[in-house]
Length: 133
Length: 133
Length: 133
Length: 133
Image (tube, rainbow over all chains, first blue to last red; front, side):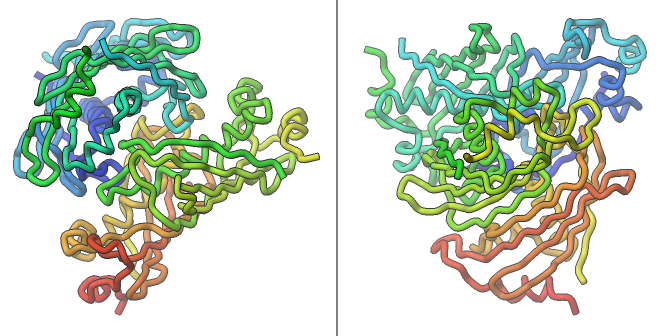
């Protein structure tokens, strides 16, 4: 299974009055994580956009286990849970430096044409890259 | 069933390179929506915090149907889907000005003590307020 | 002098570990304020974008006087401090509900063509609208 | 003169409809930069907070020269421009991978007590660390 771990440090901007990372900032952390997974495979989301393909998220799920705090160094383990020519599902687990599981999440993205905004099939080079053989 | 609709205008800051509202900004819209639902019932989340109770989110789900754009005036319909002394689940539907459904989501929050950070039961005045009789 | 006051309520997402509105969120508040000033004059920034004009900010200044907190209802008084065919300067003062001055700021924006990304003159209808005679 | 350069990659969340990094996200980049400067000196802002000191920003200035885009790898050069027992001024220059100057900025921060919220003098270990001898 394709997987990748990305490290990221919590910014003050991302915390809230509770002193926790605001729950709505984790989708951004997941974005960083899947971007770095693609980069680790030798490609990039940016390259996809340059070919006229965009990847909007169609579903998001997060189960929050523990808070993260300012300046925490987080490890985000990302896997490709499902891949088809029309959609891709990433799974995420975030851990803090003590190894505690902060949260678990999942996002599904589709491929659309930048010009028509209609769903399209992913380029085959992209599918080949992310296929696990 | 307790429900409330809040209006909110999309800020430029909340859009991304696709020209869409970034998927990670909807949790903030949901926060605004549940805050205004509570206010409409005559209370406020702030008042709860002043009593030493905080409400972290323990789960989030969003199904994205259509994009929203800069300056769109959105209507967020919020309902209380489940309420117990230890947790509360809100459901959300966001519509644009044309009445298109933008996305559907759900968040579950628990009550914790600001001092001990341990789960606690919600104050009874709060439960009474949100109970639908 | 053209001026407009916009109201805005602080979101939990916008606060930080200090319990203050994060200093980097005020530029977004200023964006809301100048957008609403334009709307109050019968136009909109969106309309400008539809005509192929974008308005990037070229300078920003903020002097922070007092913190704002979660759920505060803020009043942002916005004025047009300078206007030429190539640039516009807005001034801002944010007050809380007690009338305390939270901060004072200024942004200068230029007009560029969406296609060429080069500076252009503002459309004359836009200048007429914002001119104070 | 004490200086430090931090690298940071632009997130999709940080871009806007223009395709540019939203002007209001640079204060967060500056926060990351001064945090890393302090860490490079062997200390951290977090340690300061643990000693009961907070550092709110009292002024911010940014001059925007060029846009940054999604996935750009930015270098932020940070210097301490002024230091006294009661305040500290950081200067910032952000460059893209081609070496173009993206923007230039400055922030001044004061020291306050977490409990009293009143201005205090910085701990001497902190001043010693940041003094340039």
